[in-house]
Image: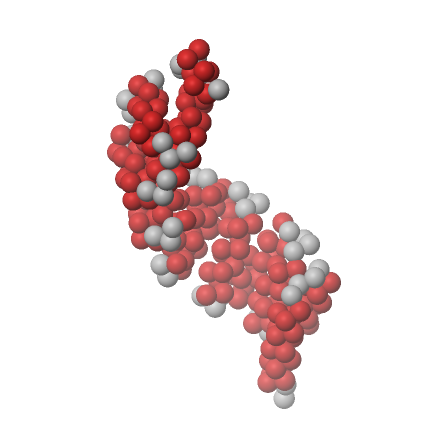
Length: 236
């Protein structure tokens, strides 16, 4: 059907992109490369999308190093576009290649990438590289870009906990439960931060709310035990 469509409408670019993916899924990579070349011939010389499509095709046949090279080429043929380095960075993060992902995503940001997913992934990458300050900066940028970005707020909470910044963790978890009021784990996070801030009554109320929302019984029991121990230790 796609080939028939392209015979009638050779400039139907979406159909050609879909055909590239289909050929890759069926392991006909030579034909997929031919269609990538046909796509490139119909686009301007500085358009990175043929290389992005080639990268996706190579991923579908599990040629990951070659796919990364295609994404990097996309960044080279369009040196002012964030598309190539962003795609390289996102894919490298998915594969756990943190250092490679960081370089690509930071280059994408330099070129103007400013979407929630890019910032969240960069925060995750920096967190895995133990750069808490850089992770905080990225997550904060994502939450600024989209104040409803729950994943970015959770990232900020994680960074705050790792930094022993209990007030910062509470602030982030407050944002999470505002966005997801029926998510019990958000209340568990609030309870932990409140307990660390010495606000035992508020922490207990948060645990009660988490229980009502169906949070894990073992996590609740552990936090209640820790809270009781802390209260006992602080009693005269």
